Amino acid sequence: MPAREELARLRAWTAVPAPAFVGGNRVSLLEGGDALFPRMCAAIEAAQHEVWLATYIFHDDPAAQGVVTALREAAGRGVAVHVVIDGFGSLATLPMLRQALEGAAVKLEVFRPLERWYAWLQPGQLRRLHQKLCVCDDTVAFVGGINIIDDRHDMNHGWTETARLDFAVEVNGPLAQNVHATARAMWARAHLARAWREEVRTLARAKRPARQALDLLRQLRGGSRPDIAGTASQPMQAAFVVRDNLRQRRAIERSYVEAIRGAQRRVDIAVPYFYPGRSFRRALRGAARRGVQVRLLMQGKVDYRIAALAARALYDELQSHGVRIFEYTPAFLHAKVALVDDDWATVGSSNIDPLSLLLNLEANVVVRDPEFALALGQRFDTAFAVSEEVQPGPARGGGMRSWLRRAAVAWAANVYLRLAGITGRY
Image 1 (tube, rainbow, N blue to C red):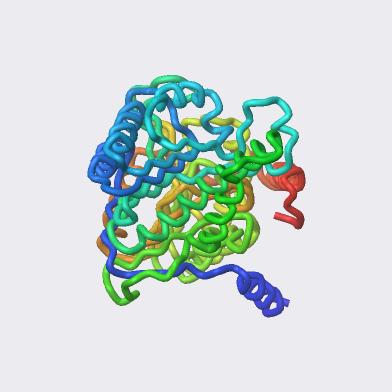
Image 2: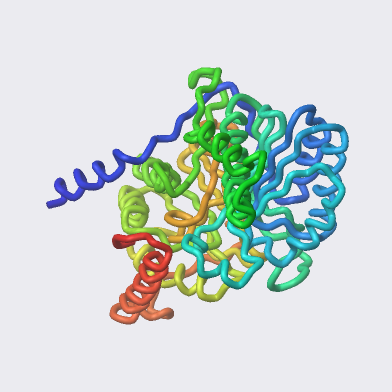
């Protein structure tokens, strides 16, 4: 039976594209918006041809206003500037963003807008644009988990003294072309949807913007992995991995699971929202049983209580197999990063829960480089040092109570996925 189950798991991955690593890149780790936004604005200011930006949240605080200024000035120089934001994540600030960009030649699109009440009834509204991407002239790109909002500003809890823990990467080199293609595709997808609605309302238009957008989208199909100059033997090797609702539905999950299955010494994962599927949990348990040090960094300062309860429902199961769990308490945790051994690391937008792994549009960069892994490992060690380790034991309740908690969360997750149109057990 174990051999048969393993064969079934291997067959399940055959339809998932493997990460396409490309060499010749320089990937820099950026901690927090204080590190990201100056580098991003400098790249936008240096852009000569085009800028593409995709984000879940685009706020209106001073950090976001600095990005708006850079975008406006780039457009004023004749640079083609395209921005796409998520209709739910940026719902509250969309009017202010439109006002801030008024008069500028910035082309703003909204992915699945929710400005009218009946939009909530349309299919697919549970599937959101959760990527955080910026690419300038397809030579420099930024990917990560940081929204366009100050790290000390939380939309639900207000301003805090300590910045939340979050990361992004700056990519210089051929991999930026992958990010460029994906950002363009996201903008075109949002533009196509809007243009189509406008055409339906007006019956026909001379320029046919919906057809133009559809042509662009067809050109970019599969564009997150175009042919790129450079060989995988050159440093630094990196892959741009996206999760979409087409052929790359489980690409990010596959990257994680295969790296964990091959781990020999260390697996560190930091993520705010954690409720992985069975294959992911099996990989974590298996690594810990092999003697690999497996550490999870979770929220100690909770922003969404339901999400925290879902993660904690798995604590007993994982700890019983040797997985160590820490809760980060100095500030909110928003990082989505992982480190395996001394040469595999990922930074991106994907949480490890049903929304990110099966619904939302996500994007991660996977880096195979010892120096980058060392830099991320140092950040992990610093974060673990100021976190509280959750001690295993009966204090949280074990046995039947623990099983019932997991069953309740699993039932709720599957109901949510079915409402979103996803079938099969998670």
